[in-house]
Length: 218
Image 1 (tube, rainbow, N blue to C red):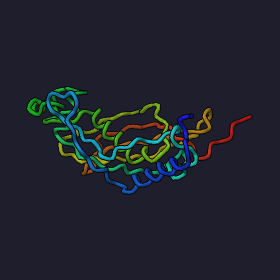
Image 2: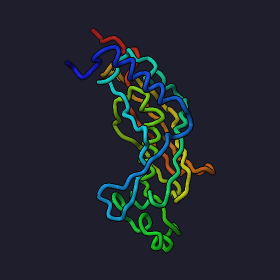
Image 3: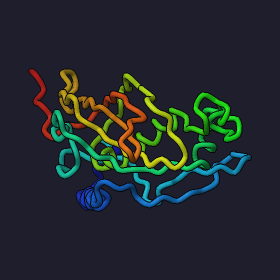
């Protein structure tokens, strides 16, 4: 049997689950932590207890109209993605595994750096924004992946204790000329501190299924 819709009952159950997950806007789900596998320094990452996988066209079809499709991403629409408070332990754990520059992993050495203290890796900031985007949008949409991002800018250091808020503004939403069942959304993605300082900005591109695909040309 193809890995598409197996039966209507399964679809209804998955749609109901997605709708429940979409219930509370503007705040992130509860966080849990676990030791970072293979981290000799005992670092930990925050893990969401209700982590879920974004649906794709192998799971859903146009029979799921309550999910976000290309048509829902109108130019100028803003998605508030929720917030995440970053900790010193999280910064060091990420830095030790992925970006071990001294000002990401050593608070003492960081004091003598141009930043005057420990800061998060820019890639850590990108990962946080990606997770917020997933939980607020992708997990309740028919997302089909991404061809990439443009214009990544790390505009201000992220420090322990910063409460980071994600935001996405739709710039364009274009149906594909070659793939009538989908289109591309381009959005300005930003991460801000609690005092309104933008720390990260990039332009992201994402494929979404169309709710009503255009008919194939003869």
